[in-house]
Image (tube, rainbow, N blue to C red; front, side, top):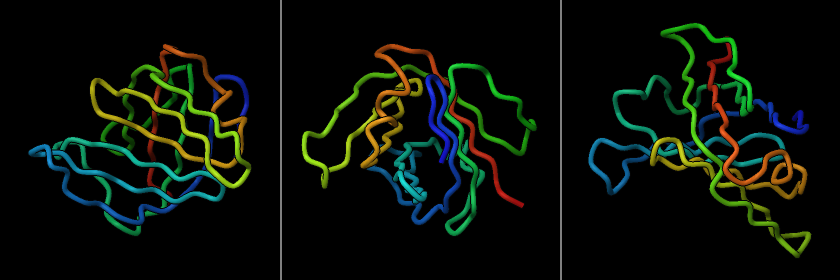
Length: 128
């Protein structure tokens, strides 16, 4: 996993896709090496299946992407919850036009990569 100011890049597997209580919304659970990701996604944007290997990029700069193959959404950093205990994960919450992206990690630099209300882009790409 690569983390620096304004950028997080990692690879993972979509472990679970489940229906939300909100109609036409699904919750994706993505497990990566040092971070777990939960993402609310409207049904029309769901282009992935359980078990798909994905590359995840969260950045302040608009990423280069393949239209129709990659998913790119932008939003704002809402909350940074740093854990005071080393065995409890810190959380980064990002609003993607009302849909939530939650990153949990034991690495504190994940939360420190962005500031409150930073505009960020999420890019999900299937690994081939």
